Length: 284
Image (cartoon, rainbow, N blue to C red; front, top):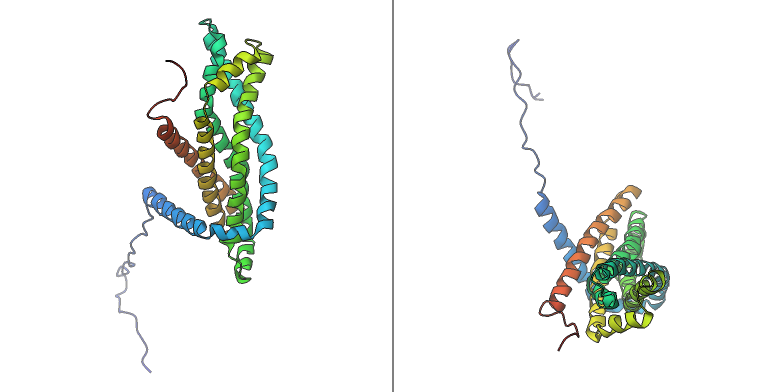
């Protein structure tokens, strides 16, 4: 039986150098972002493909809607009122120096086009999307998603689709609360707190300078925001791996991505909708 022998080395001779392995190169930040964006787009396409069939889980859709709508509605109204109060404080005292406080309502109407829709996105991301990531992430690390798959239930339909449909049911409610909550805050500050103008004067310019197109604009922005941020949240929830700490990391990452999505969506729609003209019903 032959025995392998090591190569002969003279006493005192230096040992042979160890083989050098090339270091593993990590993908750059740009490559990582592009790869993650591609995975998100592929996931979104799969979810949208099965979304109509998720309507069959009516009870789960209604359960999710009952969780999303009440608590989110209260927070949305409060935040929109705070936006209305802030804008009145700025516009009123600016016009007061010019002796034109009666026209405060004209400036507050413009708040709806940018600040109000941004606040809607921030509220939805923080209240609803963060919950989506935490719930799905916990289900993923506890093997609940695998249990659904082993039972023949498609998680994209039962877990993701039902939550998206419940979020879409919130869109008309959120649009109405955005418009009404913003005006309620402006009315509270301008008429009751500052007593700078009458309620009829504020209503005349606030509602008189808004059109049906403005309300439709809020609805479209809300729908786009809900759809895109909801898909991103479910994506980061289902890709969670590891322990409980990984769920927190997934929530933090999804919030950052969703805030960017809110900014991009609002910027796109305000330029698309009002880029060719402000469509303000004032003047001859």
